[in-house]
Image (cartoon, rainbow, N blue to C red; front, top):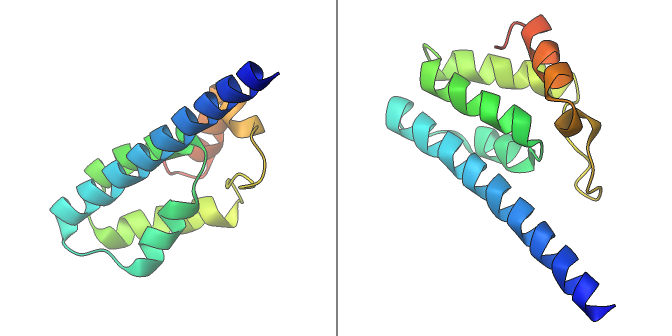
Length: 110
């Protein structure tokens, strides 16, 4: 039983580490391209827990014409409530990449 708990803990740790790495990459790209980013943007990105959404945000951070354009897209995502409940380990959006991507596409984000 303890071994199962350790394995679950390792998997959760890997997931958390990957999310942190994705969030940091987005913030780094935005900072390099546009200078200092607001604490509001940092906070919103910090709450994102969907790996697919984070991947798309990284692409958007690299291609947006301005920080304002990025922020608009971020607001669209936020308004459609694509955030995962931080207390839940499973997210339907992260399980179906095509559904998630098509949702972002409909919003005009990707």
